[in-house]
Every structure is written in structure tokens, then in C-alpha cells.
Length: 221
Image 1 (cartoon, rainbow, N blue to C red):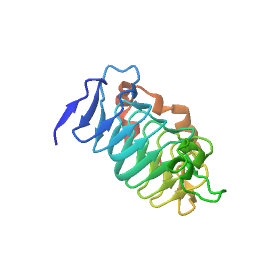
Image 2 (cartoon, rainbow, N blue to C red; image 1 turned 90 degrees about the horizontal axis):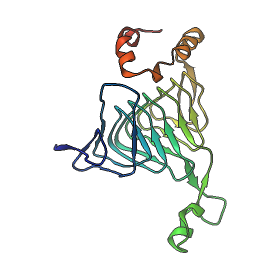
Image 3 (spheres, helix red, strand yellow; image 1 turned 135 degrees about the vertical axis):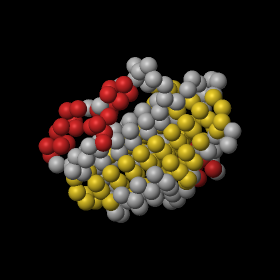
Image 4 (tube, rainbow, N blue to C red; image 1 turned 30 degrees about the vertical axis):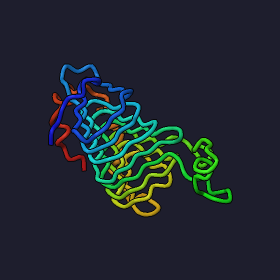
């Protein structure tokens, strides 16, 4: 498939069937190394994307901020913000056919459809309800076929099992699964979690990550 470098945004690589909005901001750490953003078979209308991130066969729309080295893999993954926003921290991985939204239909009226927008030509926001932002802290892995509902915060280092429906916030370094998603077990011991939180490795420059290669190959269990 033909690939080309977008001329209106430095270091964003786009294939010939993808779309990204002109206003997207790309941010990076103070590194001499260059890690481009890659958008393949996707439509992205978002606020911000970090270095080294890649989006494949997915649809992203609205007030969405994506950190560094995030992987979003379709097909059929949809991340849509019509409310207060969705933030995806650095080093997160989101699998196939995942749905993440920050809004829901307003169902306390005669109809839950978009009648205000479709028939009365009013703002579509009158047909939906909001809660808080959806926040993914760093290093979250979301398995395929999962749904993350509005107002949820997924704590750093957590794993969401395939096919899960996440209806409430998830503590850091948790492994959860099911419908609704429930805690299966912590990912690491309390001592290991304290050590990782002290490292704050997700904030490191690429050079520092490379210098500490061994720690990323270490089995903490």
C-alpha cells in the first residue's frame, strides 16, 4: 500500500485511504530520536497524538488526546467523544473491536433516539447525557471486543480482559474481566507496584528507555 508523509504535520505517516484532521497536535519529549505517528486504514479527528503512536483500521472522533507510543488496532475499534473528552495515556495498547465512549443516549424521555437533532434540527447534544471524562492512565492494555463506558478511569498498568464491559473505574495495576468487569487479581505485588510507581518510567525519554533496556525484559512476577 502506498504511504506518504503528510506535509501539513511533521512526522505523521498516513496511508492513502486514511484521514486525519489538520488541527491535530503532535507532541514529543526532548529526544534527538524521531518516532513518527502512523495512521493506517483509519479516520482520526482528534486533538492530540504523541510520538511513536500508531492507529490501524480504527475510527477516532472528538475530544481525544493520545499519549506517546500508544497502539490502537482494529478492525472495528471505535473511540468516540461527544462529551467531556477521552484521554489515553502513553504506552497504552487497545485491541480489535473495542468501543470507548464518553456519552450515552438520554433515555429518561419518551425516546432514546436522536429526535431533537434529526427532526427538530437542534443540537445533537440535547439527545445525549454526559458524565466525567474517560481516562486511561499509562500502560493500560485493553483486550479485543471490550467496551469502556463513560466516566471510567482505568488505572496505570491495568489489563482489561477480552470481551469485558468496564462500567466503573479500575484501580492501578489490576487485571479485570467479565460483564460487568470485575477484579481478577492484581498484576503485581504491592512491593513491585511501589517500585514501578517510583520509577515513573513512562515519563522517560526514549534515550533513557534504551539505556535501561534490561529492565523492560525483566519478569517482575
